[in-house]
Length: 109
Image (cartoon, rainbow, N blue to C red; front, side, top):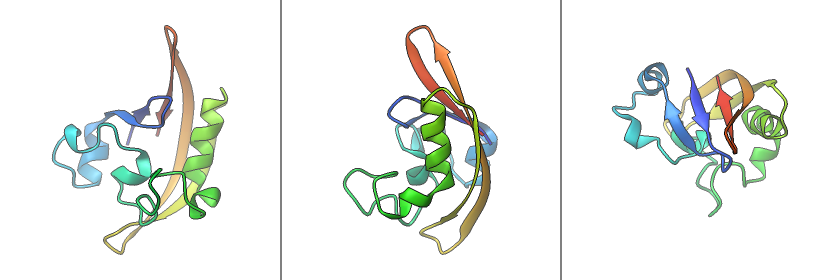
């Protein structure tokens, strides 16, 4: 699964495997969302700021990996994301910074 995030941590690209794994019909359903919002994390909508703004986000490996990437470092972290459907996603997340012209992105695997 692969997504690309802009500097605001919003999804600007998601590959077909990401969409298929999450039973998402089309890319428009995730564009502009943050990863926790796209995977229906139970905490993603608890605050107005969304994904990465709750107390629970302080221990989220995905959040830490994204933040490390935004500092220019590749990062590998583990996380468990409880979803609104009652399931949990156990993930190993790899993030890599990517610079294109004057813009910074995070490649999120």
